[in-house]
Length: 506
Image 1 (cartoon, helix red, strand yellow):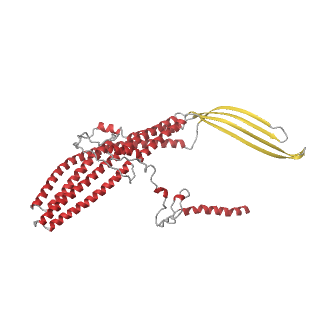
Image 2 (cartoon, one colour):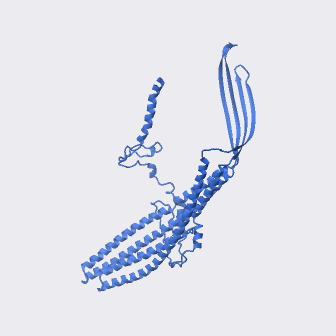
Image 3 (cartoon, rainbow, N blue to C red):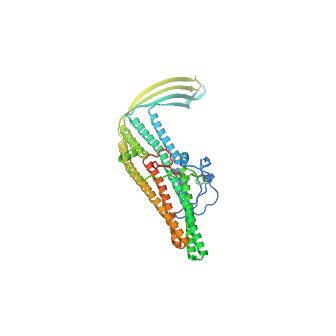
């Protein structure tokens, strides 16, 4: 009982230490957390006080991201192919996919190693000393002191000879998953090509809108100059000049918005390439091309061929095959396994009794064993594993079918959007021609005194809208053509555009 009382303070102390673990969490749900950083990063935390719901400042995080500061950039402008090449080297998605593919390849090597024997070297050594008192002294000796020591080195061999195809099934599943990872690696590169292509054309469209905004501002200033000339000539009014100046201010506001949008899309382009937002590169404009007319719908044969080469569908098919192998591996757990074991050892032992000569003994032993293992009862573990493998296979098949349906939907939608963009560009061409004619006529009429300032400014606005509509339709045609190529799995290498063949306009 006294022993229990002595241990009670120690027990209470340990219990108190365990209860203090909650002190690391915030004190309440409505007050900011205040605490110290763990030992692993305490040296990197700034000593500056944290206010409100701020978090500790980690000095290491303020350093440039590894690898980005050393990206070599060329002096001239980058065209689309050069941007894609840079993205394939610098975009972290490609490196992540590469590491995943290598990891999947190493997984097959791990399973292949199970087909080979396992050889291990073991060494056992020990020393024992005992002293036993004698009932009476014998020749001045009151106890017997003995020492025993020895060393046993050995080699052990273990080899799974036969498992009814379980390892073969596991290897097949790993190979299928490695194949899927390799396919997705190429698919990531296709996605990077698509992303850079999309942002490249979006950036060019933003630059076109900025150029058009400059032209629209010049047109409104021309109307303003005409209104000022009419006022100086005594045929105009201050109201006309005020309306013209309002149109100029509105055009300047539109120009500022266009320039801001251009900068935002430039940052998105840098992100697609994999460059930091502080990078400064010059982007070359794409060659202007005449757009073809709308194309006919994709045939069922073309859809089937496109589905068969899409990386996501091919990877899902390989994943479904891997789950089939998983079922066979689970079924093999119900069957016996045959093992081979072998051991070779050499022992050396010495026995020493005080007063007697030391006895030494050396022995060598060898043995080969053949065993069979058959689990008879495991509480339903193997049955559960088999059912789980079957469910995984069913889920993989459903995923594959869903991807196939989604792929067809994406391809049809991309083709529809492309044809709509091509039709829209044709309509925008006519709109620009008529808007230009209307603006020229309205400005000339106003300058000659037979037109109104309202009509002149309105026609200038309509001309800007028509030009922007044509530029947007042109950019949309390039983007949707690239999306169609990506959706059909045809975006396997960089190129300037993915439109049907058309003559370049110089």
